[in-house]
Length: 121
Image (cartoon, rainbow, N blue to C red; front, side, top):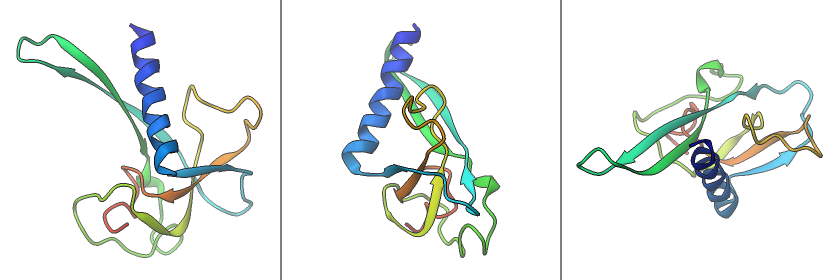
């Protein structure tokens, strides 16, 4: 059911708000804006019955360029919600674009899955 997925997506965004992951800001000139993508997963019990829909918003960090968008990476695992040292901007998530500020982007204060910075944030 679509309503279940929309609810899961909203839950993820509410989680970001509670953790102060990002701020909606005017798009900065001359800065890269990384796209985001929704990843969907069904949480199931042993009987394969779906008990929960999980939506995760990830940054498409493969578009980041070393020396421009980040300095270097270290670890193979991500530490999410760590404080970022660089300025990182991501586009508004599909389906949740602000009606009042459709041209704005999110300035990240904390790391997201998919960022090159996530392993060391």
